Amino acid sequence: MDKPELLVMGVLPDWDLAPLAERYTLRLLYEAPDEAAFLAEHAPGIRAIVTKGEIGASAALMERLPKLGLVACYGVGIDAIDKGWCAAHGIPVTNTPDVLTEDVADMAFALLLGVAREIPGSDAWVRDGRWAQEGSMPLTTRVWGKRIGIVGLGRIGRAVARRAEGFGMRISYSGRTPKDDVPYAWHPTPAALAPTVDILICCAMGGPTTQGLIDRAAFEALRPGSIFINVSRGSCCDEAALLDAIRAGRIGMAGLDVFWNEPAIDPAFAGFPNVLLAPHAASGTVETRKAMGQLMRDNVAAHFAGQPLLTEVK
Ligand code: 8YV
Image (cartoon, rainbow, N blue to C red; front, side, top):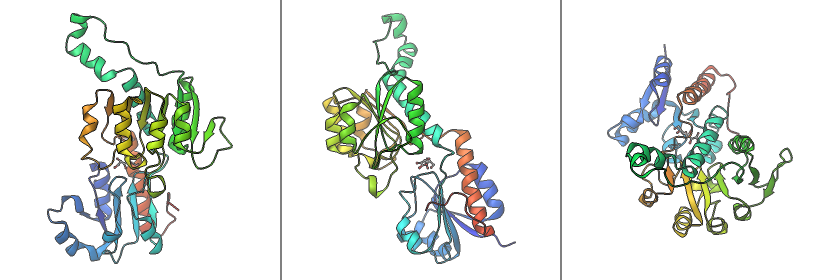
């Protein structure tokens, strides 16, 4: 049986690789010791790319694949895929929306609770014996009932808002246009939203339209001691301005899952005791990653069967 060749850009779990290998010939780019030589050998036969949100696919790479017919992304964000090139060449792009929404929103709240209630520090307090030696740990910061501002009220932003309702929070948001189906206050920009909230959460999608969306003006507009959480893309922030806001105390605490230049992030972040870090892991539960892999594989299967794609990014 003819097995179409797939270019696999990044590591996938075995529960995805094994079923893919049954139906396709897998070319694992991430295992190639010499990428140029690997592509010289395999590029002519590649019929689809399987990639991940943080890896994407560049025009320079895709130019080299004369038989390319699909780019399937294991992740919702396709900002690292050159969508313009794909559109110009009639190559469909699929992603994995919805299946990861609730986990990413959970992570936003995990980071928020973790940093405000100082969960890492409280764990250390117990482990290091300080509880027995010094007594109670220092007091922390309340989360429920605070004013939360969501930058980007898309699928994930709305899932964060649902959680915030459960926490009795006053919810507001920024985005290009106000939504008529929510009762939350709208602000046109993060800079307008920032001074009205205690907690600012970035849930915007990545890509050129949101690069630096949370700009210096927004970080400078935060009230001193604000909490900042990012579960979308590092590129949505002016990272130098974010670091300055932490140093200046306008951001009193931050929980960050995403950064510019992952995984070699700016080492300054690790120097702040009031910043909780995560390695771009918001969708990283077994349940969600299995659902993402299934949806990604279903899209690839639909493509090769000549059937409509399940979740094509239009
Ligand atoms: C990653 C993500 O894709 O969905 C996205 O856009 O950034 C993540 O879910 C995930 O880490 C898989 O690589």
